[in-house]
Image (cartoon, rainbow, N blue to C red; front, side, top):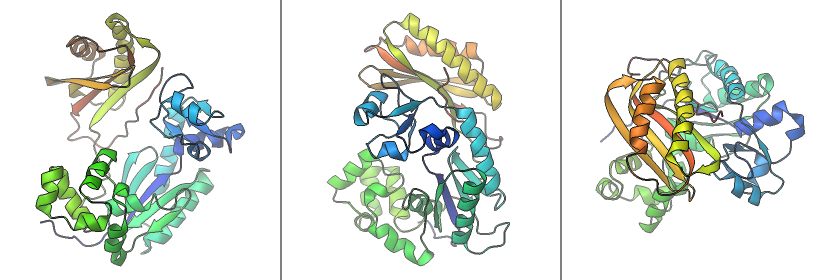
Length: 360
């Protein structure tokens, strides 16, 4: 069994509706209005939604068509990832004035270990307040934060008082906090797992805690071990400032469905070129090529092939992609294609943030 290690002081900072907030900050005409970054009223998928749009049920990952149906007044804005990265870099710079133990999860969230920090302040709660205030004063955006003894609890806590708020779960509060927590709010328990837990009579952390390790491993495999320990406040994952990316990807949703492999190859050439550009930018290569296909009925399929050597060149990538494309006949017309490269040569490389972009 894992041992409970000494408590650390972890802050999880999560920007509020980051992409949408950047757009509203840069364009005063969008402030106070429901906006969606990405997608359109005819095609595509929403990448982010403002809080004004969220009140209408507009969320990331839903189709632009559904978003517009939920909110007829919705304004669609094209993503500007270079701008989001620029803002993210400013925020990361603020983080590193407090600690070098910063683990970015994406452009808009990160873990900070402030157990020992550059300010010499023993209060992680006060530090989180100061960091959030500085982000607002120096960048112009609001952020929320969760503060606790490990990454798991801090991540959950950051969602409690959104937007523009924070929550601290002190060491002596962790167990009661987790016991009272609805199982759907446990980080790492998705929609499918939540439904499965409901069927097993698990609705809260307390009910999850009542199950044995054997029971959880029987029903949830390796994840059962994770659930067994985190509900007891045991999560020993350290904040790693040298976290290594596991894959690089590029994809695109089309305005008109593609029904011919010939047209698909043409689009895949463009996607492969975008992927090659990203790979060279971060100086990485990979062995496993994955082709992602989403059909007009939203059914998604992936096909992969692992090579005995690393590649990053567009010509080699597209050669494997063509093989994967012709592996079997298309089931329907296609609305989205994507290519990713994983099994990367990053064992000795430093951390890089790879942001998926929809740039053509």
